[in-house]
View 1 (tube, rainbow, N blue to C red):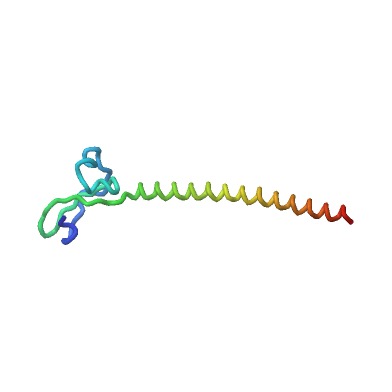
View 2 (tube, rainbow, N blue to C red):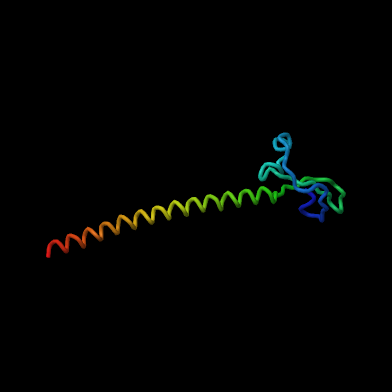
Length: 100
């Protein structure tokens, strides 16, 4: 692949691979996106895998949403646990006061 050893010019920006390209080209498999480049010295056209900004943003917001849900879940668990501990402490104090 000439773009690994030579300077290159991007001919076609990063775009999603078609179903045929995904099956036929190994460059499409890791990310599902590919860009067309022309190598400066050999003038050869080649394809290079790339990462789409839209895809990266989608993955980022999915991660943020997941982390917010996990944080909310643990916040609810902490509140419930605190209530249980408060009830136990009040019961213990009540029993101590009754025994006097």
